[in-house]
Amino acid sequence: MDVAIRLEGGHRWGLGHVQRQCGLAEVLRARGLEVGFVTTRGSEAEQLLTPVHPVDEGAFMPAGLRPRVLLVDMLAQGESLRRYRGTHPQIRLVTFDDVGAGLAVADHVINPLVSSWGAYDAALARAALHEGPAFAPLRDEVTAAIVPGRVPAERAHRILLAFGGSDDHGIAPRMLDLLRVVPGPLELRVNRGPASQYGARLEEAMAAHPHRIVATSDDFVAEMAEADLVLCAGGSMLYELAALGTVAAATAGEDHEAANIAFFADAGTVIDLGAHGDLGPSVTEKLQPVLVDGDARRAMSRAGQALVDGRGLERVVSLITECLS
Image (cartoon, rainbow, N blue to C red; front, side):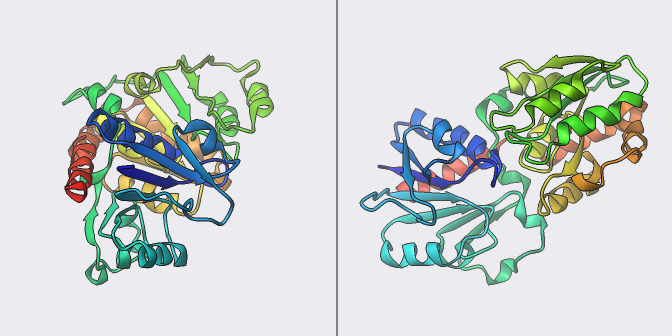
């Protein structure tokens, strides 16, 4: 095998890692490389990935699997990664969004998200470190949908609610309830993630809603590109929305997402709605600029496209190709 991708995805981890690595795998396969995935047996990720080599809970890699390059997308790694590096020194190792052992033992660490957290000292990293939005590996279909210099609508009408593939905290139904008091007309397009546990609660929130409710289409990239406003969590989708020039407001579904959202808010691309547990009536006040202020909406769209140029996947593929040569 040329490239193995070790990752997790599901209720405990979200599906952002799965999404971005599937996009990377597709490009690598188009170049004639053999690519496989490794994830925990019985997880949601196992059902979504192919070909997949499942491992038992707590295991790192299957015995006998010897890729030329191992990509690890699991946030902070510890002793399991150190042990693997020690017993497989010939395998080139690349880690993504790593604030742990990869900084010391990997050949390359690609940190598009966590570089803004302040969680490590880049000067002490032994790995070659590649940081920031320039290395966000956007999927090909996202890059193809980018319209440079996009001019958003003066007011938001079409609003996309997308809180990850699992929406573990049931943010979507709560947000729908909060949006009932926002003046219309609005079209609320609700994304039902493949691992969502809140179907019944979501149906309840959608019932007798004062605004038009529409389920998203199968073309989720088009949904992001065509939305006037996206309400989302604080994961890798923020990079995609910035590159598309789509105005967004985000709430932190996990503690680490607060730092991601703060980074984009400081760059002027996102409205920070705070932690999901604090969502309340003040959300509608925070949303006012991105609902009705055309100047604010245009400024956010410009800031997003200035921050993320859409060439991150190209740069990541180049690094992996270098590892294989």
